[in-house]
Length: 470
Image 1 (tube, rainbow, N blue to C red):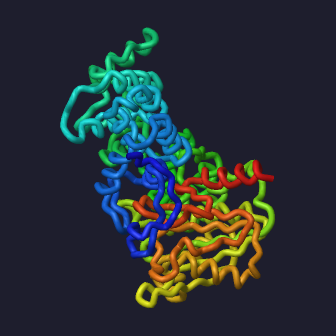
Image 2 (cartoon, rainbow, N blue to C red):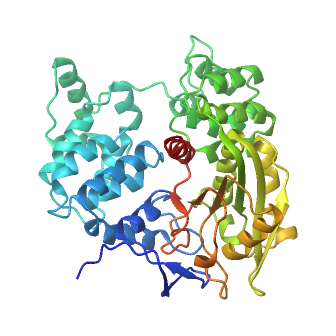
Image 3 (cartoon, rainbow, N blue to C red):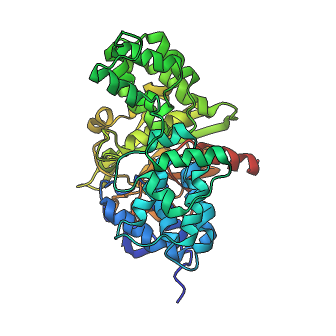
């Protein structure tokens, strides 16, 4: 019996976690929705991390090998995820139908030196076993990407060390210099890299790094900024620490203007602004850099953001941010490229099973984030789930049934037990539903262009799709 068959009907047996009927979809679609906004092994509002990872494991052999490989590369390159792509490749290595693409795919998705050892840790999660030939080939090729600084920075103590993988993969150096580098890695003799972690640790120990003078934290942070030793994510995560240390405001602003943010997810800027509100202008400008060169979405856009309780579930155990933050960040970017936009926040009452939707001012940047924040909207529209059919009918009435595009950002956990989500008939020329969660069942297929993920690549996709169609 064939299982990998596309079905877009509403199946009475499939439900969202809130009980509404959900769509039957193909194995490939199910794998995409599980992977593209997945912080691997991190629980979400309705599902724990083990359940989500197990679903990925079950789906990989049901999807064509080339499509799994392409998804792993997309998840790493465009959606900026690190661990979910590694799990995809690990599962490919289990199956004879997929193994031929493992080496090439693994080399592509490993983009940081620590991902070499992370992959082997994932490979051995169920117990140590020999690495397959394709895995060895991919790991050996990945080693050639990294210089001494990268290897030294990420050669961390753990169950699997980089030197262990070097031996296991039988990597062959391309020249004498690389052979010498790998020899020093094997002998634990790499030069200590000048990273912010190393520098701040030295300050804490009172080590003298500048003649007879022991630098303080402010001096250390400022040196690292001037020498451009902080990557984009490290910069964003440490803004609060820099402010506490008295680092010059202009210097931090200059660093943000010059930062390379290609690997930073949009919600990271929102997180940074929460802890460094004085730098919101600089953070906003840095966030909008990803839109440089983009054309506008012409005409009228209706942007609907799901502000329900499940959207407030934390992205990870260590994060204070929820899926609503990711949705708000996407809304901020979309608002920036729309000619004309109407922004709605929606939730409702789970007991009465009635939606509550409100038009919010289409402000720019972090001002829009503030309007969509859970605590700002909960009293007005409640904390229930999305009611897709009801909200589309409501917005259609409010907007006179006219729009060039509708974009809904949601986790797809519809709460309507009477009006099936398939009864929602979007009325714009083009209609998109962006899913920012990994939950098993969803609603946004059929008449919707369904998009999974939470990076700015989603905006790229919408712009490209409409450019082709025009």
